[in-house]
Every structure is written in structure tokens, then in C-alpha cells.
Image 1 (cartoon, rainbow, N blue to C red):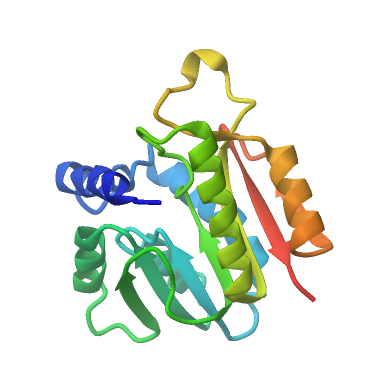
Image 2 (cartoon, one colour):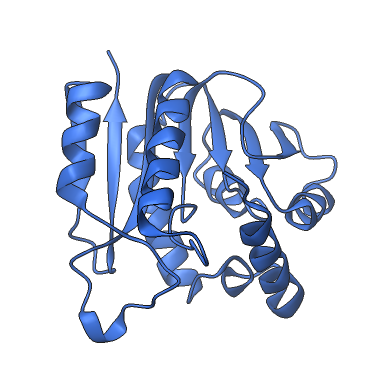
Length: 204
């Protein structure tokens, strides 16, 4: 699936709002941190680990991990070249992180996370976008040794607040897919106050 339109959408957000939560299409720093709090639960933060961050934006999740004093080897991937250039500039000379322009990581890692990459579909139809989402989950599973985590907007959002260019996923469908296809150890988090959910898939 061609994601050029999506990349341009996020590049425009970065140009307009800079390296801020709004620059990656989140409403606030508080909601961005709340999402990170859910995603990091897939990791054993007490041990050294490698992590791939798909849709990394300007590298805010790496900053979050560093603030937690985790010992991680981080790779951030984003389809927006402008985002990657900004991430590299912000983190120049910092150990333990690397950034890559594209759709996919160039390595396997202990964990993979994806925050917000399934929300904005723009002109893509629901069926096409759902197929893209499922393919991406297959790739995240294949590239992760110990587990992966992702979030999606929920189909249980209030109808008056839903927008036609966004994709609202079925949390029960994706939980079932992860449970039957990837691991017996799967958690669905749908209780943290946002119109979305997070799924954690732990292996082993």
C-alpha cells in the first residue's frame, strides 16, 4: 500500500506545530504520555532490551524511555523523511538510538511498538486500511522476539466525535487475532480514558 499521502500529512503537521505532540497529531503532552505508559507495559524495563518504534515521529518515545532510565537499544522508523531528519537533529550524539526513514525496521528486536500509525487513513477505504493494519501486525510479530504493542482508535468512540478520515478499529477482533495468531499471552487495555485501546502481545 502506498503511504505517501500519509507521510505528507504528518510532514505538514510537523511544519505547522514543530516538535510537539501536535506535531505528530496528538492533542496534548498528557495524552501522548498516557499512550506511552500503556505501550511500555509490554517491555521488561528492568533488563537490557532492543526496541523498534514504528511511526516514531521526532523520537518522543525514546525520550520517554530515557527518562525512565531504561537500558534500551532504540530504532525509530517513520515514513516522513522530515520527521526522521528532525529526530536525528534532536538526538545527535546520543547513544542508544538510531533513526530510519521508511515503513519497516531493518532489524529484529526484542520488542516493537507502534503508536498512532493506524489512525489516519485519509482517502484509503476501510477494507484497504484494515488489510494494511493486519499486514503490519504480521510484520511486527515477525520482527519481535519478546513481544509487541500497538494502539488504535476504537469503534466504541462517540459517534458525534468520529471523523471520516480516521480509522476506528474493533478491539475485540484485533484481540482475537493476536490471541489466535501470535501468542497466548495478550492484553487488551481499553480503560485509560482515551477513545482508543492498546494491545500488548507477549511471547514466551
